[in-house]
Amino acid sequence: MLTLKVKKRASLLTLILILTVFAVFLILKSLSDNILYFKSPTDIKTSEDLIFNKKIRVGGMVKKNSLKINSEEIKFVITDFKNELNVSYSGTVPNLFTEEKGVVAEGKLQDKKFFVADRILAKHDENYMPPELKEIIKEDAK
Amino acid sequence: MLKFFTNSNIFFWIEKLTNFINSIFFVLLLVAISFAIIFSPPDYLQGDSVRIMYVHVPAAWIGLASFTLIALISILNFIFKIKNLMLVSKSIAPIGLMFTCLAIVTGSLWGQPTWGTFWAWDARITSMLVLAIFYLLFIFVHKFISGEEKANKISNMIAIIGFINIPIIKYSVEWWNTLHQPASVKILGSNTIHSSMLVPLLLMFFVLILYCALIFLMKYKTEIIRIKKKNLKRL
Image (cartoon, rainbow over all chains, first blue to last red; front, side, top):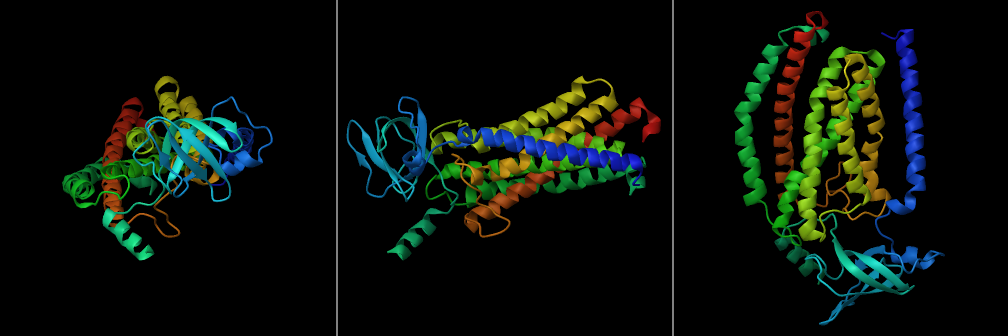
């Protein structure tokens, strides 16, 4: 079974595999900024070269008790539990958009603390459960 | 083992297996679908759109598993040059492509009501699209390149290079910020999906696997017939 030819092909294959892994790693590394679908408030706070007139996406949790809706705009705070960012938005929001749930806002940064969104996406988490169970968990939490 | 493959009585076994799967498939399909649509509860947040998940998740699993299989077969084929294996991977590829596309389409339909968008260029969704492209390349090589030797060689390379994409898809939701949520069903560690939803999910997965087996057997049979027509000595 293990003739010289087979061994040759096996080593060639290993070489090809290692090279592809390396190439893919380099590609992903150089693309690392673009692969991130959104930046967190911490990313924005720590980054040196902030872009103010280009569209970016910011994501995190909608902070508890921060959501304020009036007839012109929706205001809320995106938090990653370390840093926060104030967001203002006017338009429709997806059904899943509420407090203490994930959100991704697309828009422009006004300054380090203030973001004007022109699109809101809701981020769903990995928890799936029936409504009755959610009620029970809520009761327990109280 | 080799005799089992090479012997022409493989048609007998294919026939038998197909008949067996056919006899249980529709009953199980009905059971799984009624669990997924009627008996399982709606989600506390998404409501009834959670039911899309019962097709989306198994489809994505099958899409990934099929490509993994094709890649492993290609590695074996590349090293040992076993002709029969090529027929197997050629028969798996269309199934994998179909389920990958199904996962993308159902995901998009789920994304609209929950995320608020049909499409997002995040790491998970983009890498899934790349997987579909690899499947297409694999299939097109066999369709458009004349000369079997050459086609086999190129498609093997495509499968082996495309294999790198599989761990990227799997871990994309952990390595990078994505709109797509992380996995709810884990082999190691606790699931974050309630058992009343996990059961229909696994049922649907099982039924879809049966469906894959059915399509695979039919396709494998056709491939063998095609080869036999071309060159009797080969098998």
